[in-house]
Length: 295
Figure 1 (tube, rainbow, N blue to C red):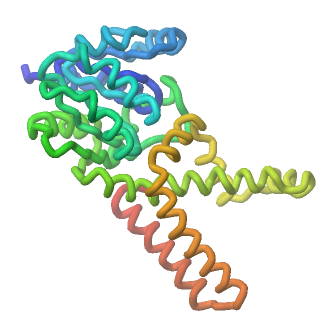
Figure 2 (tube, helix red, strand yellow):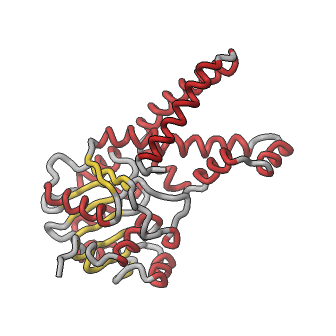
Figure 3 (cartoon, rainbow, N blue to C red):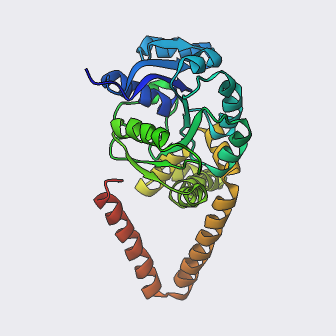
């Protein structure tokens, strides 16, 4: 019988990402022999139990971490370092700590002082999600054909990296190893700034005069509906992301503001060539996403 990738996998934070990992592990015994789900909220644990997402379900993070060969932190980025500092002292020698945070530099710097030489840390970011949250929001195919970006530290063992890569491949994801700061700049433009714009345009619509606001909501076309889908995301999660990746986000937001101003100037001056060129570039990017199976 083939050995599973991980003997005991502990997922702390069984929300959208964490519960999707657990669901996939339930379907594929090659991922883990045993799974542990941890959440400090007893009601969340009760729901995870009802959904039968893990072999062991507990509110005790220390218990879960002490028994695991891989601990995956699926908590908001603002809480990752705090939880890591709490559980690292009880983790088994040779175990691997990983996470799913969408910002890297701030998280890695905060965790670094607490790391142990006998516990590998492999930061990972699955580029997948929906606007929903909680254990009911997950599904086993969430990571299918999506990228998972790994940003290991320089002294991380190749064996630990290979284990986490194999884990994500088994989830259906494609993996890429990259530099921490490069990761944060990429995610700022492909995820963080688009979410910021979605929240902002919904705020703009909400602050219009009452009559106009009502008509915006009544007659919302597909473009605005797409923005509202993104804007339905968890506010605490996005607060943490914006604050933890602020430098990269502000850099990309400034780039966007410059391009938006150029488009405004083109519209004001009737510059048809600039308008068409901008729209064509957008269409080309959309085609590229479809070809890359990311749309």
